[in-house]
Image (tube, rainbow, N blue to C red):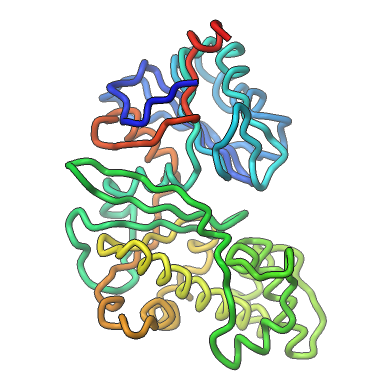
Length: 346
């Protein structure tokens, strides 16, 4: 396994980039450093036993172009010779992929680290500002995204280089802050005796939250999926609306905490699958109010911009940017870069 900790000098093209989430697997090929990304139809993670089968169905059944390098983003920390996904039953085995597809090298990163790699290039229609001031050039940036789970990462700039900082910020503690929260939190399901941010700010978290809201109101549970909650909120259901309102406040608080942790004057970006489904609620004042309520730093928080990521595949875009221009980034590769030479030697 490669132990390099600096940015790569270059990639061997074509490069297969893949974003493997708990719900969907998305693939694209970058033909060379100047080519546009060729994206393929996403597939359901649950529909395939592993990466190889999904990549074959999505990519290799539709193109004769064979990659020499694969850069893969996965939901969860990257440790060890094989990488199990946090919210799916897949296990990524880089050495096996090298042997099966004739790859020269495989790099595996965290999925929100991949989204962080996209942040310096996201502009125009790819993002929508949700308040705050102008971003500070080269200021630290944060991305977080509720979807199947809650991912988070940061991007900092130093020595003319963008440095992604992956983490498991989605598992930070999340507690109540006002009387309304207290009523709901008393009914929230605990996991391991605690309420982490992901237990609220995710698809399954929306269901947990809706059940707690219903119980606090003396009503019966009636939602079995996060999508059902957001659809019911769009239809005016009272429990669903209260659930989404609580979700938005909690998202604002966690986003604000991460902004403070990294002094993210370059902006805080909301990715993942849920924010686009509740965008009208995020535009309402409650999200920014929760984000900014960080005394004694309220004034600072009012200056930090927040954005809704509208790009359809930010993780793939980030991986493609890394593949095209690795010199712009310093990515920690220790334990995350496998080569064919090392596989054959082992």
